[in-house]
Image 1 (tube, rainbow, N blue to C red):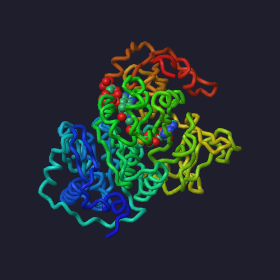
Image 2: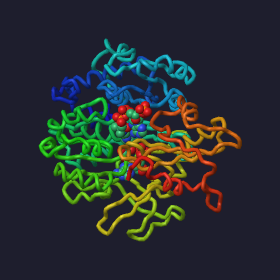
Image 3: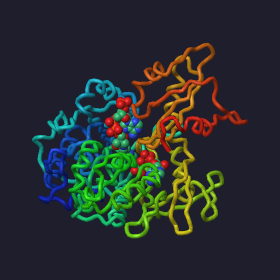
Image 4: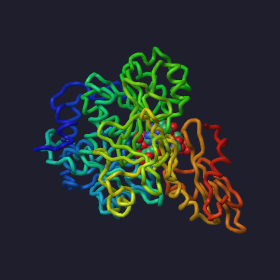
Length: 505
Ligand code: MLC
Ligand code: AMP
């Protein structure tokens, strides 16, 4: 039976005693061991009612077993739906209900709170803990370690990744097997990954970056990953001498730079550092080169499109740019209003087309239609320009979006909650420069007449409904919000006013 993704990423490693995962405690898991777990998990999915095309939601700590759930979904023909571990039950409720997931697998510590959520959504709930235990693992334990891979074609769905929207309602981006495979192929080629590579992996595995860019690329190349639970600089320092590559969001690099143990010697075994998911300050790029001799390779992507552009492996990696479109990716810069291509070098909205671009938003045909041009180009909402040499630079965003530490926060979602709090007339949520996270969330709130607002009460009010990383780091209470002549809140004025709040650049 052919299964586009399984055949490329997993099947080639059947029976291989080569190391796939190196864990924090030094334990190593071979490709063959990993695939045996995957097969048992695929049986467990099937035994728990997951059919072909059904959605399997996972909100679990990073572990080899959590990664195996992804692979098991591929093998069993299910659609994998990873969820940020920071999401509150209220947020998980939305994703499970909206996607119509058949099964929700969650950490044991959230079982009690998620049980009513799963019950309401008609999903079965099983557990998977960070140490690999839990009722899902238990259900799989005695099942066979080979599984008849389900036939799936290039256009079949492999994953749903939810991205928030400017309306405040999250959208399930539907990614096909070919979206994922074609992008992994392009990246392996562009970044010269081979089976000799050992990727230092400290990213979460519920997003495109850690799951598909890092995971699929390593699997396709047949290499190994030092698989760390999260970003911890002591762990990175300990692991760097054994790794050949590392991928991270810019915070990884600024935190490394803040540590005096980062030296040329420490990274002498590394051949490539990759950064993405948020803008890498040119000065970080320059400082990192000064300290280590390595020019960080910056690339640009998004959940809906996988990776779009990359700086060159061999040519000049230009600080402040995201390089060139990957082979197979068409990129153009257009006037956001007219959709006409801008003159060369001018700023406009970046649009992309190619096998990397997702199939659409789940159950949202109008939203999908609104974000594609009739000729199939996807409107990214990122503002950019292409210079005379073809390097793409991201200069801003047409979408109202904050990126903190590589996580996206849509102000609208936060504003809707703040606006619903007692005594609030209205709010504007903005991102301001932050030295560690790139941007930090700030809520600017105006009180209703006579209301006595305070920041702590407001934060407590929204606490249970919003993941912590989306919550404002600071709330400012003002009499009124600045508006233009059309009555629209001028967020640029607020961003300017509060830009020095955290001392970021
Ligand atoms: C954690 N916190 C954050 C945060 N991460 N707040 C804002 N933004 C973030 N990104 C908060 C926690 O809620 C907690 O709050 C406090 O910070 C400390 O938590 P922690 O778990 O110790 O966090 P820390 O180790 O500091 O994590 C920071 C980080 C992490 C940058 C290492 O956020 C991270 O791994 N980010 C990577 C995100 C990613 O993979 N993005 C890719 C998206 S895909 P409190 O108040 O409780 O103390 C994509 C496409 C593409 O964008 O192109 O790749
Ligand atoms: P997400 O929806 O989480 O996939 O985030 C995608 C967004 O991250 C893009 O639309 C960009 O705004 C941003 N992004 C990703 N990589 C870069 C980069 N290298 N430079 C600037 N912004 C980036």
